[in-house]
Structures are given as structure tokens and as C-alpha cells.
Amino acid sequence: MTDAPAVATAAPRAARLARYAAVFGPGLVVMLADTDVGSVITAGQSGVQWGYRLLLLQLLLIPILYIVQELTARLAIYTGRGHGELIRETFGPVWAWISVTGLGIATLGALLTEFAGVAGIGELFGIPRMLSLPLAAGGLLAVVLTGSYRRVERVAIAIGLFELAFFVVAWAAHPGLGAMLAGAASIPVTNPDYQYLAAANIGAVIMPWMVFYQQSAIADKRLGPQHLTVARVDTAIGAVVTQLVMCAVLIACAATIGRGTPGASLDSVGAMSQALTPFLGQTAGKLLFGAGVLGAGMVAAIVVSLALAWGLGEVTGYRHSLEYRPFEARWFYGIYALAVIAGAALVGVWPNLVALNVGVQVMNALMLPLVLGFLIALAVRALPAAHRLRGAYKWVVIAVTAVTCVLGVWGGIAGALG
Image (cartoon, rainbow, N blue to C red; front, side, top):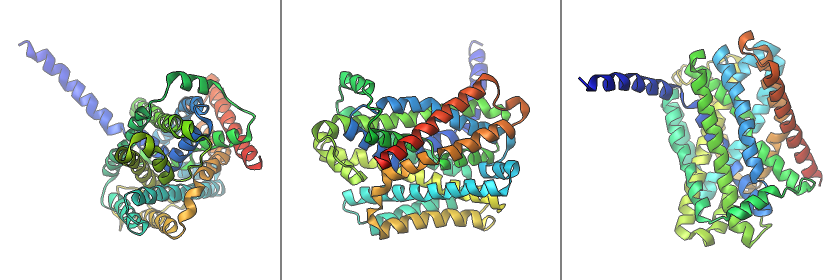
């Protein structure tokens, strides 16, 4: 008799956990993809050149990232539309094409960094890029072309969890707490080189394809208003995890390379891994860093390519859902496949594209006014009246995004001119 209440309590708890598990995913996946290869290199370069002076920025970006992606989740849940489709319905096809053109530019830049990272890790283990790139592209095509949205999401999360290896790398670097606190409090805001890397870090956190992916994924998953709270938790957990990963990379590089050879230039994952090897050991340095970068690059390549396929479908009207079979949505799967194959091919032909890593993140920062401007405009106009941005929170969101845009654009231009 005494077991009955426990069984009765366990059943609703299990049902509640099952509902949470069904809703979780889009926020965590897009955040794991946010810490992509370009972001890892940007964080590592920040630690090498400026020690811990960009660490505080990484933490300050957590609430900003959450604010942006929470609006994305809210728009998807209450409108049932992807980002491009909602822009087209609200502002017309011209603005929709402008937004998806920005997405295309960001997608190309991101894919170049992801595949450059995959090639770099392959070369660390003696695998030529002519072999590693086709293998990576084939794996990415197989994941999407043979699965439903739920399966793609599970595979993406599993791959992305390899990024947790960066926490081990940071711990093995033995950073000093006092040095971290002192460095974080010393911010050379007037230095153009610092401004440029600050802009790159801002651009590494908020990217156009993130907005398109999460809104489209939630719409594809058919989440409703009853799922908003869990979707917010999903987004919040992802925002914290991705920025802590960025902190871990920055700390590892600041405590090792930054302390020994400050000012070193790390424009590829291979250079970062080789520079960390004397401090972490030959085997550990390669395995841990390689696992983190591969996880980051592969999950980001899935998300970025799907974001482009969804975005173009929402603007042009072709079928755009992972719930369709490939022959039922030829354009959707075709765009995804084309993006993956083109990214791998370009990196195979022009190996020096890895030098674009930090520049791609700065480009993302320069695109922030367009991305965040559309997002806030939709949150004000396209949402049902009861769920629109309003009151004090509306002005908080506008102020936070405006400051983020100004810092990103100003830092990018000042750093380039300086």
C-alpha cells in the first residue's frame, strides 16, 4: 500500500520529463553550433593576444544571446512560421530577399571555416584533406538525407557534445584565478586591435543563420504556446553552455600560449593544437582539441546548411521540411546538399581560406543591424498582441541590441581602419 503514492507520483514525473525531452533541442543545437570553428579560433586568438581581457565580454554576451534567441523561439511558437517566411508575410518579398541574401553570405563564410577546421584536424592525424573533406561531407549528407527532424536533432546534439572537451583543455592549462580576475578587469577599450577582436567575438555569438535555424526548427517541430517555457529553458541552457565553451577556449590559450608567446597568430585549428601540445602533451593535446573542433565544426555545418535551405524555401515557397522525403522536397534537400558540397570543395581547392576565420566573425558583427533589426520589428508587429514586445522589456531589448550593434560595427570598422 505504501508504494502506491510513489508510483502515482513517478508516473506524472515521467510524463513531464517525456514532454520536456520532446520540446528540448532547437535551442541547444543552435547554441552548440554557435561555438563553431571560427568562434573557437576567435576565442583562442583573443586569449593569446589579450590574455583574459576579453573574458568578461564572453560572460556579458550570455544574456544578450538569450534575449535574441528567445525572441526567435517566441516568433516561431506563436506564428508557426520560419524567419524568412515571416519577413515575407510582414514586410514583403523584397525585404525577405534582402534578409536571405545576408543569410547566404553568412552561410558561405561559416561553411568555409567549418570545413577548414575539419581539414586542419584531419591533417594533424596525417589524413589529407582530399580524404577528410569528402568523408565529412558524406557524413553530413547522410545525416540529413536519411533522417527525420528528430533524428537530425539527436545526431547534432551527440556530435556537439564533443565540444565539452574544451573544458578539459582549460582545466589542464592550470589557469590562475587571480590572473583571470585581474585580466578581466583590465579592458583597453581605445585600442583598435582590441576593438577588432571584441567585434569578432560579438559576431561569433550572434549570427544570421542562428535566427533562421532556430525559428525554422521550432516551426518544423510544430511546437505550440504550451511549449514556450520549456523552449525558453532550452535556449537559456544553450546560451550558458556555448559561452562557457568560448570562455574555456580563451582561458586555455591565455594560460598557455598567451603566457609563453603573447601576440602569436593562430589562424587555424592546426596552429592552435600544435601551440597547445607543449602544455597539454602530444596525445592529449591532439585528441582533446581535435574532438572539440570536430564536434563544433560538424554540428555547425549541419545547422548552417539547414538554415540556408529553410530560409530560401520560406522566401521562394518550395517545400522546406525535414518531415518530407528527399524526392518530395527536392529543392530543400538539394540546397542543403549543394551548400555542404560547395563548402567542402572550396576548402579543398583553396587551403588558405582558414585565414578568414576572424574576418568572418567581424562580417557577422557588421550584419547585426540587419539581423537584429528584422527580429525586433517582427517581435513588435508579427506576434499576437498579447505576446508582442511591449512596456519596459521592449525598451530593454531595443537598448541591449542597439548597444550590441554599435559595438560590433564600431569595433569592426575601427579595427579594420586601424
